Length: 228
Ligand code: ZN
Image (cartoon, rainbow, N blue to C red):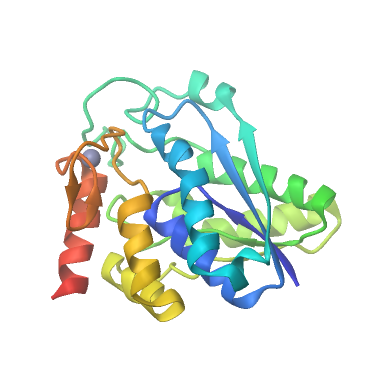
């Protein structure tokens, strides 16, 4: 019962990590450097993992290696507001320009290739259809097709769990509380990173961030609904 969690250090992936640790015997984490502006999300990962081990030694015992994969090429070919210093806005395609084409598809390929070596064929990731942005690579249809391609292409059955797929952001906070109580909620609040601009100056009631970018707005609204 081994699993690999796509772990970016954000609210969603930290919640997914707790979900996986609640269910599997051995859990490894993988994060990706792809030239994201909010690379600070990668820096909060180590502190989060250390504190998670401290509040839940039982989970710590199941927590295996953390892997970081460099995907600078993705950032280099992507002209998006996540990988360039530009304003976040709606693009002509009807998608916000924070959409990095192919990102989640590529992440899943790499995670599966890693699982091939590390002995896990179960992946856990925080994609969510309720996401405000409507990213097409977060949809269940897309992910089902991708996992089928991966399983065929590697001739091994890989499965993907997306525990947040149909949850609101408030629902994700509630799930965190179910899994790890107030201590986990507090850890995610203070030690996960969501803000697209990489801002971690001021601690708001919903966590750190600029408070104005779409990711912060979504997180703040979710927290307000959860806390209400
Ligand atoms: Zn922000």
